[in-house]
Length: 251
Image 1 (cartoon, rainbow, N blue to C red):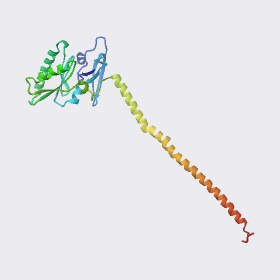
Image 2: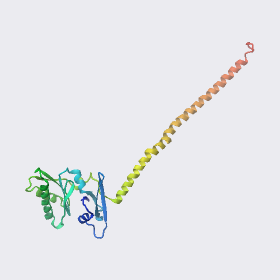
Image 3: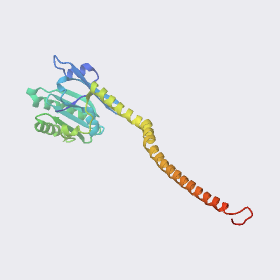
Image 4: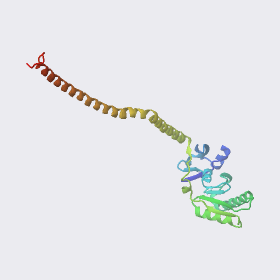
C-alpha cells in the first residue's frame, strides 16, 4: 500500500502525536533526501510493508508556488500551501463525512485569507482511501460551492503520483545503500586507475610483443639464409681462386 506522510513536523512529539506508534511496538525512523535536504519522520513498524513517501515532496513535484494541495486518507486530512503543511487533522472513521466537510470549510477559509489579489485560486486533491471517489466528490462539490473564485481539481491516484518520487527508507537501508554505492564507486575507481593499466600491459603489450617476436624470428631466418648463401659464394670464390696461378695463368 502507498502511504503519503507529513515530513515537515517541527518536533518529534508533534510527529508522534499525529502518527502514533503501536503501544508495544518500537518506532522506525524513515527518511529521504531532496536536493541535499533531509526529510524524515518516526513511524510505527506497522507501516513497514507500506511504500512510504513524503507529502511535501509530492507537492513540490506537481504544484507551483502559491497552489494548494489537500490530501485525504482513511484517518487524516492535510492541507499544504507552498509545499508546507498549513492544516492537519484526524478523521474519525465513524464520522468521515462530517470531518471532511468541516476540514473543507477550513480549507476554503485558508484559501480566502491567502488570496489577497482576488484572482482564481486552485486547490488540488489527492484521496488515498477506500472511499476515494466519494471523498473526491465531497471535496470538489463543497470547495466550489458558493466560492466562484476557487476551483478544485483531482490531482490523480497516489500510486501513480509517487512514481517519480524517492521512497522514504529506514536508516539501516540508507546505510546499506550508501555502502553499496561506495563499493561501486570504489570498483569503478580501481578499474579506471589500476585495472586499465593492468589490462593494457596484459593484452595490448602482449599482442604488440607477440608481433615483434614473430618479426624477430623471421629476421633470424633471413640472416641464417644470408649466412648460408654467403658461405656458398665464399666457397665458390675460393675454388675459383685455387684455379688461378700466382702469375695469372691457369693451372
